[in-house]
Length: 99
Image 1 (cartoon, rainbow, N blue to C red):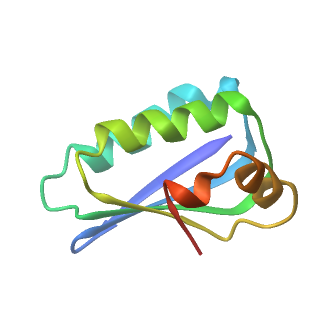
Image 2 (cartoon, one colour):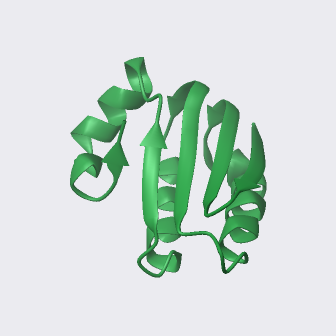
């Protein structure tokens, strides 16, 4: 999986591409730490447009990001199909904004 970070003004955008499982933890952590390391970032948007599958390890990585964000807004975007179903079963809509 690839995690591509771009920062524009006060928003960090992380585009994920591939299968989001434990094997992706290094790429995901590098991208999210880059976003969290920028003091001007107020919102972190995770784009699932090119993700076909996520597992429980990915859910854990999202929860860790939420803890580390220090109150910054986290948005999960373009969640469809299996990805959306997994997020719904885990009640992630109560923790994150899902668009």
